[in-house]
Each structure stands twice: as C-alpha cells, then as structure tokens.
Length: 44
Image (cartoon, rainbow, N blue to C red; front, side, top):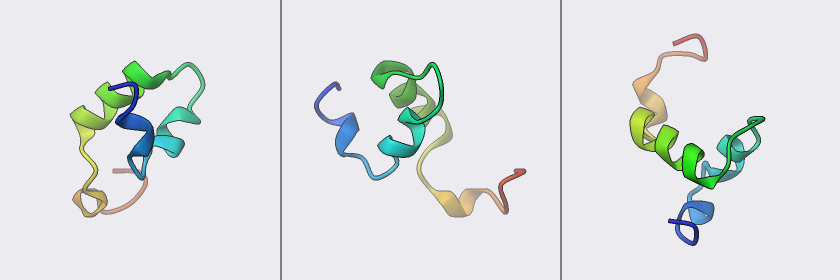
C-alpha cells in the first residue's frame, strides 16, 4: 500500500489533510471511494 497509494490521483489531496498519513488516507479513500460524481457538491 505504501507504494501504490501515492500513485492514486487523489493521494495528494488526502495527504494534505493534517494528521493523515498514507495508511489513514488510503482507508478514507476506500471508505468514500473516488467517484467524485457521487456527491452533488462539497457539502455532500
């Protein structure tokens, strides 16, 4: 995971959140997915 996650297009965004390392950022990505059309706007 340490090699694969940084290659994901959204990795830089997730890793910019304070306190998120590779492991936690990857877990959050797995939970919410990477389909940006899933949410209508930023508030969703």
